[in-house]
Length: 193
Image (cartoon, rainbow, N blue to C red):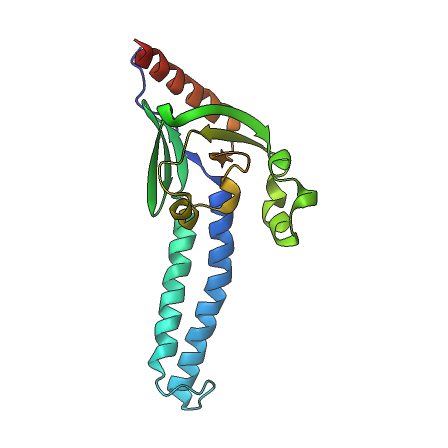
């Protein structure tokens, strides 16, 4: 039997939730600005006192494009165990984390990682669907990129609080954990030779 080069793609649930919130908030705003522009353009009545009506149209277009990118981007974020690294992919970031950089990989109850009683109302609201789930914690020797850069592309709950590391919440944590352990184990055995 031929060995696989990589495991299955596992969608990142926290990233999807963050993108869902973005597109659901930005779409109505973009549509509202578009309606205001259309009303002002066709009726001649100014609802917003701006010397140039094209600013409203430009803002509407930018916000609507942002909304579409967030809507489509929520399906493009995944993690995948590969032969010599773990791939963490988002629409604007493809991060390859070498197995050499991984110190420890273990499952953890999500509600223990982010206790609801210690979270603000907004955090509890964002994380509520996941408190009963199990996440895979990947403790690292160090991040492959600066944490400040990573925070631009990843949702805050994807960062492990106790040490450098990532919290990956996928729909089938057991399958993902098995694939990661298998690929990492094969890599460690071949690296030890």
